[in-house]
Amino acid sequence: MNAQSETDREGESPKVSTHRTRRFLRRFATLFALAAIVLLFAALKPTIFLTVTNIRNVLLAAAVGGVVAVAQTVVMTLGDFDLSVGSNADMVGMVLGLLMVKGHVTPVVGVVIGLAIGALCGLVNGILVSYVNISAFIATLGTLTMFGGMALLLNDGHTIFGFPVSFNSIGQGKVGPIPIPVIILIVVCMVMYFVMARTTLGRWWYAVGGNGDASYLAGLRVKRLRLLAFVACGLGAALGGILLTARLSSANPTSAEGMMIQSITAVFIGMTAFKDGQPNIAGTVVGILILGVLTNGMNLTHVDSYTQMVITGAVTVLAVSLSGVAKSRRA
Image (cartoon, rainbow, N blue to C red; front, side, top):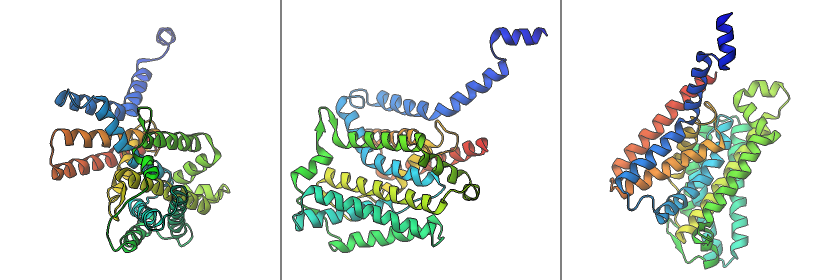
């Protein structure tokens, strides 16, 4: 009786309070990690790292990969992967080069065609996975090579220069102090967060990712939902390719090679934040910021490229391991 009264007075038992504290720390540990990385490089390079110019550079570098990572989040919500996002982006960039530089097509028409090609690439992946029943890993590994080969074939492996200034402004322009790619990333994140968290489609995607068989028995059109997720991912990869091409003022058939591993790593990092073991848009944004800050900080501290590869790989392994632990706790 006394113990019950004490619990009532305090509002909750010490055991419940400890559990809530641990849950809070677990859900927001990734944010603490981001803060720790920022503080580390701020201490190592105090006159450079936290300047407005460098912060803008971090956000600008993260914007292109961030768009692709947000798109990858949709596919990974269903338990799949899209390994072809980088090749998709490269192919779209090369098509834009042929259309705008050699074909003198207007930037608006070129961007629309580029987005359509990206969606078509996603459609191919979705058909292979959903209707031909090939595993997402094998299917997108094949299309990674196929799209990459097409990007090389389009201009015999050569880079295309000479894009219109109006197109380059998509990747290099600003609205006030904010780069346009960052604004585009914010809009994409807001739209996809709303879709994933507030719409029936988002709930269906999470349901299929949680248990595809149960979702099918419940009447959901699992194949169509999976197909739609791959189309959305292909569209996001194309947008990333457009931003990258505009930022570089050139189209190179291999410039987006790192997008695939970056996007998947960002999603895995995000799976340790906010939702235990589940892909989520907010977590992916934190993941892409961690990767962006880490890369920028290592460049400022003159860490060589080989060591950066080792560190990035270690972060990927750690993120996958932690997300697996979080998923097992949720189960």
